[in-house]
Image (tube, rainbow, N blue to C red; front, side, top):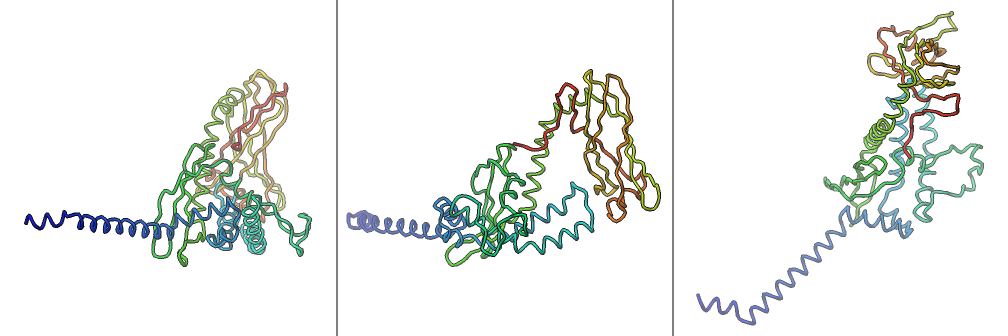
Length: 355
């Protein structure tokens, strides 16, 4: 037994073990690096480097721009057309869907050109093609990926890292943690990537609809926080006593819905104009009417006024017809001051967008 130990600890055997260990470490390191080069994380690093070095060829290898922009356009436009926070009308939505389908090929081409321009030059500004009109007012629809970005949480954003990578065969879902300073919140953006020949390629944004809804919710909450002291000031200036929904039928081609509202003015300052957001929903929560109504006049403390706001009904628009024909007791109405303009030139106004 002692001889075996002595032989194992002999200088020659120590050297052999050292060389074996060294080769093992080198092998593991090389294999680890080889594996790293073939991960979604490494491909994302390549994409980042390609943008920074304006390497369009490398960028297009790792990003399927055609599929990506096509899916983004579908999801963004669908979210706008079917936005449950706005008035929805089946006929209008059907017309919008048809128009979008007709214009989508042009939108995709413009988005691809803008992305390529950004990678190559750092700007989305593009030169019109020879067969395209140079004047935007002629026939080419106005479309910008900058507008999509600005309208969906655009602004300063910090990349906090990769939150997770879920692989299923040749498909990987990569969660990117993004921090929005103006919202003071982290939001996860999921990329769907597919494995190619030794690298990974971005195919689409996996959770874009949910991502946009989350940003919208966070922005709504932030605006509510910022507007709270403004609302308190408005409530000290006016008091909304009541609001009603009154259908008015003046004949087969003349129908309207009135919203008589009783308001008591409390402010010692003369209020020259007020703006109120009136929103009407049915029992299913569908918005049938949503608009800012205005009224001008002159006030004094203690004055009580009935303002008879109204909407003319277009019987060919389903949301209008539903607003008029639904029994009043099956509708709910909400009213919220949006601005107060005083005779001395001052104004109270809700913040509607984050800077």
